[in-house]
Each structure stands twice: as C-alpha cells, then as structure tokens.
Amino acid sequence: NAGVTQTPKFQVLKTGQSMTLQCAQDMNHEYMSWYRQDPGMGLRLIHYSVGAGITDQGEVPNGYNVSRSTTEDFPLRLLSAAPSQTSVYFCASSNTPGGPYETQYFGPGTRLLVL
Amino acid sequence: KQEVTQIPAALSVPEGENLVLNCSFTDSAIYNLQWFRQDPGKGLTSLLLIQSSQREQTSGRLNASLDKSSGRSTLYIAASQPGDSATYLCAVNSGGGADGLTFGKGTHLIIQP
Image 1 (cartoon, one colour):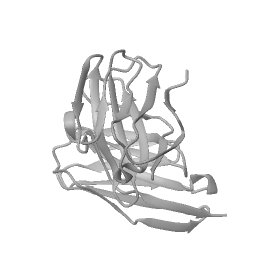
Image 2: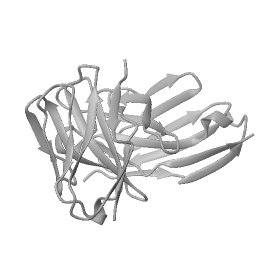
Image 3: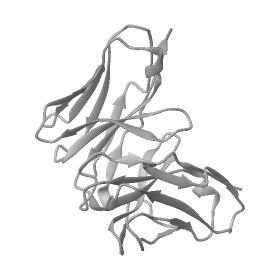
C-alpha cells in the first residue's frame, strides 16, 4: 500500500514553461486536493475533487488546472509558470467524498523552483 | 474567513519535559480539527483528528483537546523525546468544498537530548 505518491520530487522551470505535477493514491479515496506551502503562509488549497469527473477551485486556483479522469489520479497542471509559483506542492486524499471530513493523507510533496 | 493561529511559533525544550502546543481559530463553526506533524523536507503525517462533537483524542503520548466554543485546541506531548522534533501543524475543516482545510503556520519544536 503506497498511500499518496507524487512525482517529481523536485523540478526547476523557466518562466513561461508548462508542466504537470502528478499525484496518485491507491486507497480508493474519493476526495483529493492540492495545496501549496509557502514560507510564512501556511498551506493553501489550490484545487480539489470530490470524485472522478468533478473538480473545483480552492483559495488560490489562478495559474493552475486540474482534471480527474480516474479515482486514483489527480494531476495539477501549470500552464505558464511564473516565479510566484515557486513553492512546495502537496497532494492529499481522504475517504469521504464530500470533503476532508476524515483523516487527510498527504503525499511527500513536489518542490518547484521557477526561474 | 477562517483564520488559524498557532502559538508559539518555535519551542525548544529538554528531553523528558511535558509540553503544550496551542492552536486557535476564529470561526467556531467547524466540522473537525486535525493535528499534523511535518519533518524537514517531508510531507504531513496526521497525528490526531477531533470531530466537532468530541472534546479530546489520545494517541500514545499525544493528547489533543478541542474547545469549539472558545475556538481553541491544544496538543499535549508527554515525556518528550528527540524524535518528537518536527513542525506541528493545526488544521481546521470548516465545511469542505472550497474551504478545504485551513492551516496554521505551525510550531517548530526542538527537543534537546
């Protein structure tokens, strides 16, 4: 049981480049979400999904897209990277479809540096 | 908008001491509150989850309490060990959806051997 996995662990991008951060979970969880963690800011919700085919915006969605074609995968796409998107990105999942009403399981994170 | 504050921001204590980490939130209409541990360069590990109807939860040397009406939670760590050194994060669930979890900025804890 791998839990929540994220790839890559670290990435360097140039301004304007695009990339996809991968997230997968093997716990059959319906609810998945993406957070970013910045120094002095705490974690902030980017996008979330309550099940396959259903996604919605969180607190800081601008510059990011998501899709949920399967229960297991929830990729986060940066369309045109900006230095302000330099951060650590965490994917999380939980067992309840309506939201994070039960224990949240977090992935190990992806560190992104945008030059 | 829900805001979560954690005090102190940093704490350093000798091994063996009992300690308390504090978390406060501005909107008492919450579904649950979670305490997480984060080690440097790692993800978050859930320690305890307290539903809004509960007063406390215990796991080993950890005890978390919740006073929803006053907007406060505490994490009590008994007989601290160097392995407890980490950043501890408090997160409040105010109803899912776009709110997700609202996190505090964390308490950086160092246990001196």
